Image (tube, rainbow, N blue to C red; front, side, top):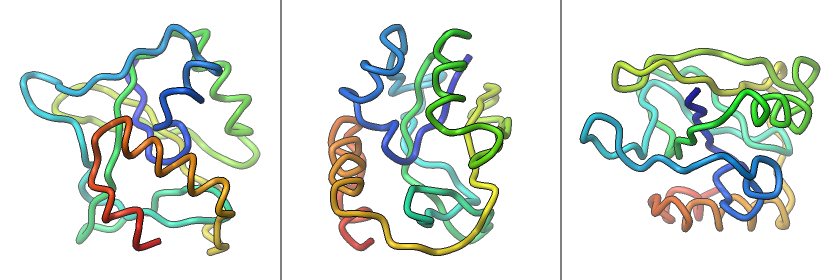
Length: 132
C-alpha cells in the first residue's frame, strides 16, 4: 500500500520508529512525487489537508505494510481525530488521513520542527513550510 504524508509523518526518523518497514518513494512511474494538487495545508494543532482545487500540498509518499497502517491508525487516532481517504496519485491507489475537524489552531514550534525536518528528508520546498 502507498501512504501520502504531509505532516510529521514526512519525518524519516519518526516514521522509522513508528513503521520500521516503511520505505520512502520519490518516483512513481518515472514522475517525482512531491505535491498533491487540489488540496491545501492547514493546521488544527497538527497538520491537515483541506480540499482546494486552486492549491497544492507538498507531500511525501511511503510504501507501507498492513502492520504499518495499523500503527499509523493508532498514531493518527483513527477514526476519532482523523479519517482515512483513498486517492489516485499518478494512477496508483494511495491512502492518507484527513482531520475530522477543520478548526484552525496554530501548531507548536516543536511540532513544526518535526514537519520541517520531514520537508528536508523528502527534499520538498522549505519555503512552503517556512510561511506557516
